[in-house]
Image 1 (cartoon, rainbow, N blue to C red):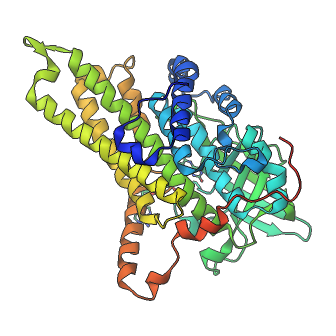
Image 2: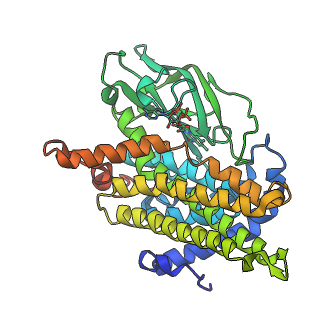
Image 3: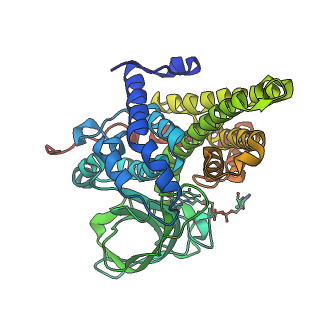
Length: 422
Ligand SMILES: Cc1cc2nc3c(=O)[nH]c(=O)nc-3n(C[C@H](O)[C@H](O)[C@H](O)COP(=O)(O)OP(=O)(O)OC[C@H]3O[C@@H](n4cnc5c(N)ncnc54)[C@H](O)[C@@H]3O)c2cc1C
């Protein structure tokens, strides 16, 4: 296989195996996704199931699953490469991949040996597609306000509530659902529990998928849970550990995944715009000859380089087991802001033609809006950065273990306690 031309900015982060994966993702995007983009875009109410099967065929849902369970065990830089390169061609396809990778973190970090043996081989071959259901319609990003409850009836947990914006809601086989298992007076950090709930269980109902702005083909809809019975074997982690499971998945997988979606879209916005202004006639030359246009292009190029460095630097640190909570935050929130500014420039430089649905820039711009909210909105990420900064000034609080370190030990591949056939 020929090696791709990767940006030199990223040289220090990429091994030969990463470069081969980069090429494989680009080839897949060109052969399998590009021909589908127009159809997906034209059908906002449709959920694309075929794409997930194609991604599963590459075993990419198992990019971080240990080899012992049939996964690629390729790490966080590899995961970013896959999501980033697919997002260049379709934000929706990248979203399908990344949404089912987030709950894998919860399963890897909090699952029992039995849960690993039973579920990870299916995750790796894509036959068990996962989702993570935390957000609720009224509470949004306020996990502590969660109203979904799970009550123990002596034999099983009985789960009732509504989850919203669940990535891959309509195609997932297995949902990680976080619910309240303690009275409202209990601290959030001990009040929630994560459960493994099959999509076909009695009482699990999907609210009809409606088209949204952006990411056409990807479902991130509502799921209702009406007295769904969950046996104790399907509790993920300890009772009371649900907040930790949700937070760590979001911080260590969610943030870099959304950063990678944003980066892919950012790259496409820059290249579409450079092409557009280079071809559009003006006076005796092209729009690109005007210095004011070049000034804008220069800013777009600089932002893209910054976003690339932020994205890959953070996941490289994660792969090395270094504390990098702030780097993950910075890659996600300011990374989104950089992309968003570029998206606005791109639309303005396309001017009226940018509003023409036959040009891709409008789709890319809309898809860019979707990376702001998930895995923590900008306000939430900036607040966390400020809290971490202030904590450094406080000697007692500064001893708090960062999430990226807390899970380094857990992130070691679990070893199966009996042979696994895949
Ligand atoms: C594409 C996509 C995929 C998603 N995938 C999933 C998924 O797989 N699973 C899942 O559970 N959820 C998912 N979500 C939901 C996502 O996690 C939420 O959108 C996010 O938590 C914010 O909730 P909200 O949108 O309801 O906004 P709200 O929480 O209602 O916030 C509204 C506004 O108020 C601000 N705000 C809120 N609280 C504060 C505060 N304390 N301080 C300062 N500002 C504040 C926010 O920053 C925001 O600007 C997804 C969302 C999208 C768009």
